[in-house]
Length: 442
Image (cartoon, rainbow, N blue to C red; front, side):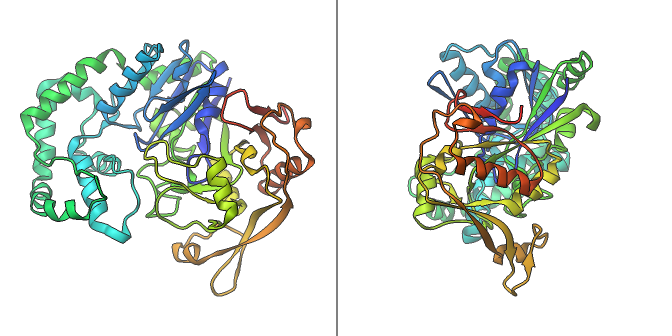
């Protein structure tokens, strides 16, 4: 049985949680390998909606390990709130396993993240202000706090003290600027309190450690054991390829690597342990926050996608920018991930449109034809898409359960995308629930 990576191929929000939930049925472990609570997965099962930010989508399968890998940055308060929410819903978290090597998001990370975004003003990146970037920065600076540190008061105190000392000047500057920052904040938005007390932080996080201790383990070895036993392990990414720190639309990216290759680092497995990569793609394109978006729409078609697709961020609630499917970007993302299959979600959202457009190339502002995703940010920011028009399908498809149930125009759309990208579409979503799927070429 393979190690299977499930990754996004656009700017996130492709519906990876639903696909992970479906494919988890014959897996023994589901491993989240990067990101933090800046991501969000929504799963609809039996009419009930579940929203996760840190806990992997496989948590609804109580007979499988549900792993938060070492590559994730964890806000323990948020994680405990999710665990409590599951308990109230009657769902056990006993199968949850947390890497002892995962890094923690501290209150000062959230403070610095928020202040930096406000300081940038119109040049802001559009982060979720959850402290993700500063937490990863501390990891790289080697002053980060890890999950295992929660279990040793002496080490925890020393590490928090060192981190606060490193940030003393920044925190003092924030104190001086606070009134100005508060005026620049959104109406009703409160900045985190910068008054960070060493003793208070130690006590607070020791408390988190006591509550999380039953879940903390060597998750790398857990993955090895499952793979060595011939069991399927799913590696679940957050965000998506075009938000990758190295390969995305920098600087309008996330602070980690959401591509399939990062699953090896973020979970502690070797490249040969992953033999399948599923790229999840929405039938159109969306983006949250700032950054280039060549196929973005500002017309009735974009409004149609936003309304029918309920395009609001799971984590922030922010409205998503909508546009036509960008095949130039999709082909780049599938190659970057080494995708062996595609899962297309939300095909039903396109029902009712007379004509469907897909971008097959760009044109630079100088008039040059760009058949490949441009590596230079200035080129991408000013690129305009060139489209191929395909017939739309007026019929609703939410009840379709086989490829034959789809209108000819919908099947033509799927074929065009698959042929252009060179990767088979194996699964198609035609609604939010896990039952509203069509298996293709299986």
